[in-house]
Amino acid sequence: MRHTREYRITTASVLKVLSLRSIETCVCRRQLQWAGHVARMGESRLPRRFLTAWCGRPRPSRRPEVTFGATLEAALMFVGVEPAGWMELAQDRVAWGAVIRGISDVDVDCEVHAVLESRANGD
Image 1: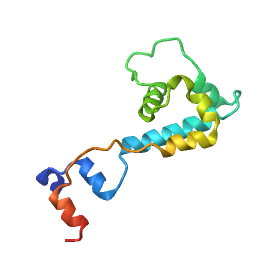
Image 2 (image 1 turned 120 degrees about the vertical axis):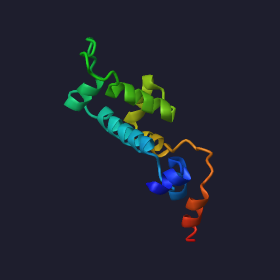
Image 3 (image 1 turned 60 degrees about the horizontal axis):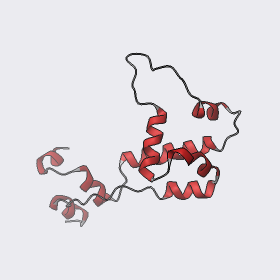
Image 4 (image 1 turned 90 degrees about the vertical axis):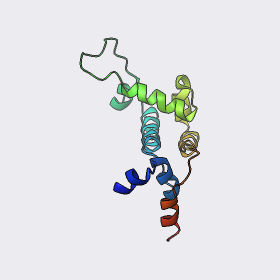
């Protein structure tokens, strides 16, 4: 930890050197995998009913405004899938899998710090 502050090493450069995905990308992938799984369930199954349910009341006070539906819509927009027709796309397991496999980090054009580069090269 001390080295990252001392040398001002960014998270993006660490992820680039280690060839890792960001936590946002991992969460997005898992959320869309689960949503596709639930979308393929029968309409009488409870998880499917919860996913497609609508509650007309406003959220109680002191509750977060961000709901699962809002984060799912943001994840769909991140991968370029239209939120209105995602359930039809998710019915095709192969096509939905291709959407999920296509999720990658946004390429951040960052300069890799010299300390990271030397450690990655074994110096």
